[in-house]
Image (cartoon, rainbow, N blue to C red):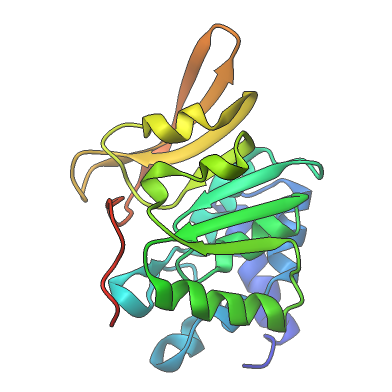
Length: 215
């Protein structure tokens, strides 16, 4: 799909700013990464609207303002190594790749990882490693991480992921016991324990254990 025209892009960025995405580095990354590249079929023409859209394997691509706010809350610096749990379309990982030194992204659906890899290659995003696996266990081989972003809702911030976060590191995760009431949480790991901040209400698919069935 071709890139959006300047007016569409301007409206897209205006919508982000109006929802609270104000950090220059995050806005620049979101201007640089074309959301349209991650959406196929019927919904492609809605790629620049601030709304979640369905993708394969019963998953969704989050609305851009939520992607922006989660990225902003993560406070990624250029030297950081980031773990993303829940690759989905690959859009969030692509944004992170513009901000971090290295991004590891893991998903339980092999098809989503395969399709995301193809997009990363076409966009020449060489600092993303995409893996098929159970994201609830994180990626112990590559731990510890400076930042961890979870794009599926857990009842509590998952223990294995907190264990893989560096001291001074930040994790952003949706937390909630149902798919109607969830809160986006930022966790800061300190020498003395964990500090929690509640950021905003959100709606995400649940964080499930195990691998997804191939469709």
